[in-house]
Amino acid sequence: MATVKERNLAKTTPLTRLRAGLPGAMLAEFFGTFLLILLGDGTVAVAVVGLPGSGRQNLNLMPFGPANWLIIVFGWCFAVMFGAYVAGGISGAHLNPAVTLAYAVRRDFDWKNVIPYWLVQLVGAFCGAAVVYAVYDSAIDNFNAMYRLARPDSLDTYSIFATFPAPYFHGSYIGPFVDQIVGTAILVGLIAALVDHRNQAPAGNMAPMLIGFIVAVIGFSYGTNAGYALNPARDLGPRFFAYLLGWGRLAFSGDYGPTSQYWWVPIAGPLIGGVVGILLYDFFIGHVLDARARLLRTPEPGLAPEPTTAAASAVAGPVIVEEAADTTAADEDRLATLAARR
Image 1 (cartoon, rainbow, N blue to C red):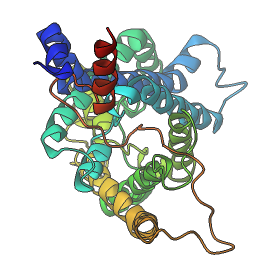
Image 2: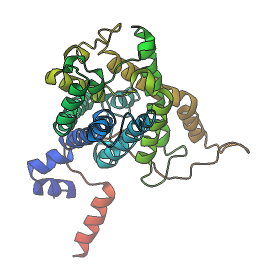
Image 3: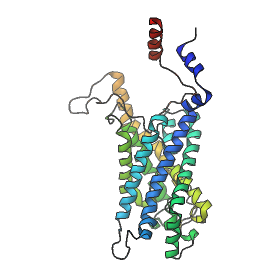
Image 4: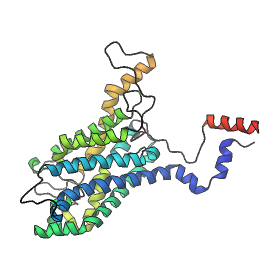
């Protein structure tokens, strides 16, 4: 007699089985990353070319100055938040190769799914940049014409799509590289805390919102050094698009005055930083929680209370991708009981 699982599989189409497995998770990662760049790069476009060119920001009478940085920081905050809300229930909403690698190193994510996730994250970021360009093409050209800049020389409009180091590094890779490691370590370490149900994980579906706030606080505290990419796909996908659309050496190989061949920094730095962040969280917090769970110890007076949530959001955390739809043992027992009653 066929099991409930076998009967359910027999009723499903190949397309349904694909959507329930790794291909479905890849679709979610693509779309989540696409939204991330669509909103994030769109925010930068508003600050750089939209407000000045539209007449809504008079540079002579009422310059926004530092307020433009607030627009960018909060824009990326909401971009991450909504990308995570959209994809989190399916793929875990990594949206970032550094997050994917960190959880694979931690053995909470299958290594065989790392490259597929990276691929769709990169393609999603590229497509998001393409839509931003399609919307702001005229504003970009107007900005360049106003300042008499050729596109390959327009660092301001290039910055809509990808990052570059501050000039006070004087061409050194060390400062921006360390900045990307530290910033991404903060990001991934705090994500690990937010999705850890053994700790003080937020209840309900609050994790994506708080992850967006993590990105905001990193932008406020470390953003000016190198543009706080924190995400290889977020930088490389739009950077490649910018190269194809005429920004030339600014995109590849990343030449900015004294700095040259910069393109690899926002890739390698975040990948290293993500692993560092999750290992630091596990060393200082995760392994302590494991030890207490094994010994069934409760915190001593004055220490942190027992976790108040039974489970944390899966956003940016591990996701188990099956190749076909399945039912739990409890579901099988329940269905078998109902069948017997009939």
